[in-house]
Amino acid sequence: MINPYSWEDLQNSDRAAIWHPYASATDAPEVFPVVAASGVRLELADGRQLIDGMASWWCAIHGYNNPVLNQAVRAQLEDMSHVMFGGLTHPPAVKLAQLLTKLTPTGLDRVFFSDSGSVAVEVALKMAIQYWYCVGQPKKQQLIALRNGYHGDTFGAMSLCDPVTGMHHLFGDVLAKNLFAPAPSCGFDEPCPDREMTAITELLAQHHQEVAAVIVEPVVQGTGGMHFYSPEYLVKLRALCDAFDVLLIFDEIATGFGRTGKLFALEHAQVEPDILCLGKALTGGYMTLAATLCNERISTGISESEAGAFMHGPTFMANPLACATAIASIQLLLSQPWQRTVERVHTELAAGLALARDLPNVAEVRTLGAIGVIELKEPVDMKTIQPMFVERGVWVRPFGKLVYAMPPFVMGTDDVATLTAAMVDIVANI
Image (cartoon, rainbow, N blue to C red; front, side, top):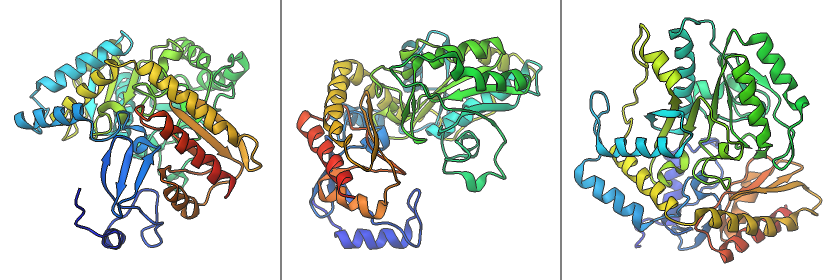
């Protein structure tokens, strides 16, 4: 494409007006202007191309400029781009809800659409709390989350992120005071001994009359540390929630739609939550959309109460463009041997990153599905490491002690090799 802006113009104008995520407005790190994207490559304003190892924060599973998704957007745009969802409905929303209830566990038969993953979590929390209020237990307002967890940057979601190691400790005095259980220490391929459940069992035994729900990221704790844990933990957690009459929420915003090698991470444990949050890859990274699914117990409990309605309603709820794109993305994924593709990416990530295990500054290397992680002993310096990746022709966005990749599923073998080689070499030289 013809680029009407120079690299310097874009950077200078950006620096003057934009505040980027997790960054200073006055001492911002360098940003890299992107003018186009196709397949697994980002084109910079100076003509360089980067292999995208992040899938745009894990959502662009089909890569960029996909013809199937492009056509879905164009076709829906001809009919309508948006219509309010209060009192109205439309075919893309209906079809997408039917598709999601078919693909997720059988008990999750009601879908509430929203704008983003964080909002999907907020919706889940409100569902849980309003449910207990509506069935005559208004004291059940607290929540239990796991240490090292991350559920989003809005206020309710922030209150569920690790209050010590998370990013939101500055807001600790104004956030809701929830309860935290230790993160599981049993690895993904390990059994989960009963001692792993002792702390959360004690929390539930002591506080179950005030606890509305337990919320976890199944199998993979994402931004809280890229920690993989045993699916057996989820089996035992489900039993505990049932025993203490507490709802169970799964946050699959990062893991849904194939990222861990299963369509949903909960399938590793064959466990059904009461509420399920989806987002990120839902639209294949084309636009923002999220969904919160719940079972009949919750939808009926709220709807047949005196309140009679769930009190939430985003302006862009069930946006038709986003819903149509989500349908196309899910159908595209399911029409292909995606499990074999993710397994191939996993094998290549594991082989390429294994070379980092012997480096003196590396604490651990781990992979699961299309996720590859090099955990360092010390945090990285973003101002130093980010340009190093760009110079190598790859886009990787480390944080804390983690240099990781979550590439688009369509990334080819040669590109995965280039990506992992850059990760290992740069880690070796920082």
